[in-house]
Length: 403
Ligand code: AMP
Ligand code: MG
Image (cartoon, rainbow, N blue to C red; front, side, top):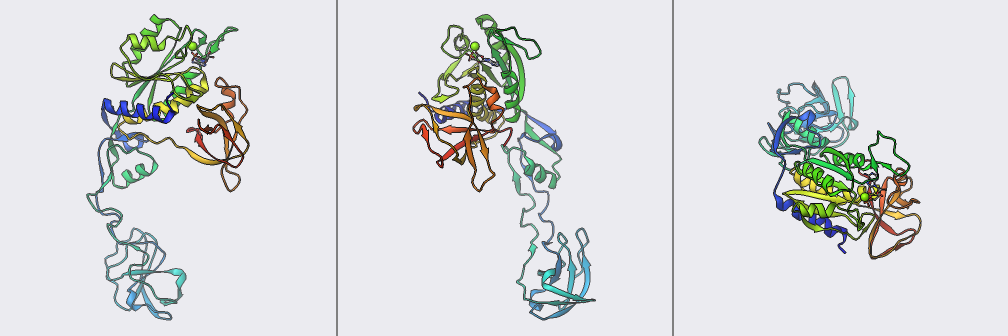
């Protein structure tokens, strides 16, 4: 059976081969968080725009300074002040962090290394030229490309674009992801389930995962396990950028999703992955749209979305697929699983000691949403090392919404 990292690579390869990204639109920078740039962001001038002092202290000529030297202080410069008067040799100017270093000065001495007596300043050590100055244009030259198409706008990118005055930007539209649950047992969460029915929770978790992955969720509700109903709903789902189904992909008599997709002309790249939970996950392309058939048990649905759907959404948004954010931690208690499958177990990652440690939570298997509500990560148990000892370095997949 296909290991999960190979399955993930297949998704990346096939979605990249579609060469489809969402159209570009212009958005105000304030409303562009999480979007992917479709244009360059360019430095509108030099950064910093002037030689900037990084300290509170005195602007000087380094050649004038030696331990015990006393110089007259001829002025004061604070951030935002015009700084055009040339510093005469043998003098110094009081300067604040962020202020422009005056012409003639070549270094700034920290205030901590000086003593002031009225208008005279005594220096207690030498200073090197250029010390405590960020030269004009050293962070970015006017005209330089600071952000490129494909970069996602996070908090730093927002600041950078704001700094250069790019208050509106061309970005890719968020990919629209249709979400469809299948199952005769499902009722909408607003309804009271009969004794043998359950509420549809996957629509909600999938919509949340789509949003965390910077997509736009299009919720199609649920359909019963009947080919005609599934087919009609899938056809609706194929009108957007990607389709994610939950349920109906196992081996049971009423697991019809794959058959219906095949009838609609889907090409499949996998229909099982060596993982637990999530083994029956299906990935295909139908009429040019990536389609994911995720198993219906809620923990399976959530794990397989993180593994397989997120990179597809990145590509559709015009970005590189982000890597799976796996971390190392020390295992707190022994773990024993079946070999041959990579397990993703609800677990708690804890940073209260020097080293991050992780502990598996008791759970009842892939239907146990309550266990996941106590977890902040998944402990990854490799297929070739199903028995792990306390102290082992293990991989952990953080819950993207919490960590
Ligand atoms: P399936 O993958 O269709 O065999 O579904 C497996 C189990 O997952 C079902 O028996 C339900 O208990 C549960 N399940 C399926 N779909 C949903 C859903 N949309 N929301 C919550 N639980 C579900
Ligand atoms: Mg089902």
